Length: 152
Image 1: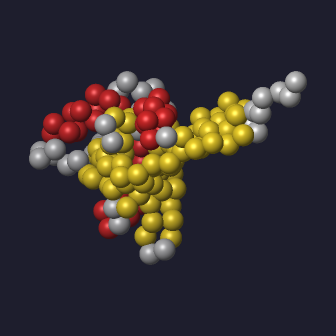
Image 2: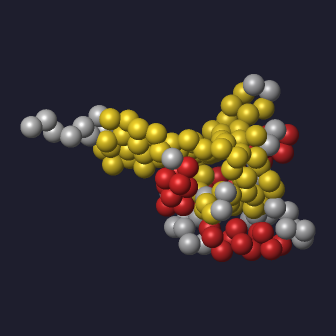
C-alpha cells in the first residue's frame, strides 16, 4: 500500500462528493465527535441540527474539525481533515445563508434524519426548532492510500 498526500483541490473534491462526516469539537480539554450529514461548497461546510451538546460546545469554543473518509478497501481509501470555525446561522439575520444551506443539503440523501431522530429519541418534543450552521474551513489536509503496482 502506498499513502500519499492529497492537495487542496483534491481535498475539496472529496468534501464536495461526501455527505457524511464526523464533526469534532472540544470544551474544557474534552473532545466530542459525532457523525453528521453536511454539504460542502466554496470553503464552507453546511449543516442542519437541533440544539444539543455539540451546539452548546461550539458556541463556547468555535474551533472545530470535520473529518471524512471514502473507503473502497482496506488498502484503497481517502481521508480528509478540515479545520475551521463554527458559525451559527440564526434567523432572521441569516435568512439568505439558511436558504442556501437548505438548498445544498436537500440534494443529499436523508440530510435531516440524524438531527431529528436524535432529538426525538431524547425528548418527547413534537416540534423541534431546526438549527443551521456552517464551518468556515481555514485549513485541510488529506491522504490517499492505494495498492502498490504489481511487480513484473
